[in-house]
Image (tube, rainbow, N blue to C red; front, side, top):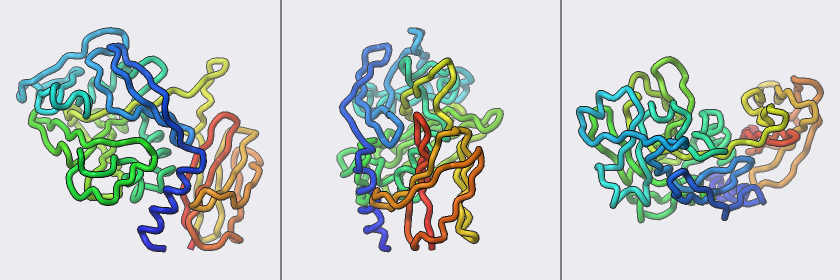
Length: 308
């Protein structure tokens, strides 16, 4: 299968009723953000631009390069310290200390975790294809050529660049850097990188560089019942053994099932799950790319697999 054909088929899968748009949400300052539903997730379409935490407290800003570099507390800035040119389109750049507060997004929303980014990336075809479906198409904002970008998801990733630890600014037009809320270890911070000349969404971690200024996207909280989250994604795993041609599904939801789609989104087959761990024989499936959906009562998790 050629790379271009794969992109077309992935786009077709995305448009089988699993993406919708047209809702809006406001932050505490009244900035309005459009939203897009991608799979089971609801994301803001624009980068966050608030200068206040969601409790109304102002977020400090710092224009001086040396003082930015020395920060160990929350802060934001605009690219090149120029809000007129950059706020509306690219939003603000926040350091990791601001992300750690957990108070940046509007009520009912949060900075996406690394696992939530993984789900988004998997839904869009995997690490080495997803950037195309997430980046705004064309070269109005992105550096040329940006030729592979389709924005088929409506996520509309924009290249807001970043502020380096030394305080200087770089790469507006060339890359989009998004903090996650995941801290893999003490003094470390996880983020995603999309570039104008690559289909890959890079999964990267900084150690002791929390003063970098990156963009943010908020994701909507999942509903809760009886104070227990309905999101089981952190405890669901899908393992593909290419040697035995089996799927091993770990899922705590007693009413979950597995549905397999081909890359166009068409139904292929389904299996009930028996117990927390289930082993499914997929040896009868033909070679190709498939989307495995673990379908829970209130949520679904998607993973791409390749059968050779």
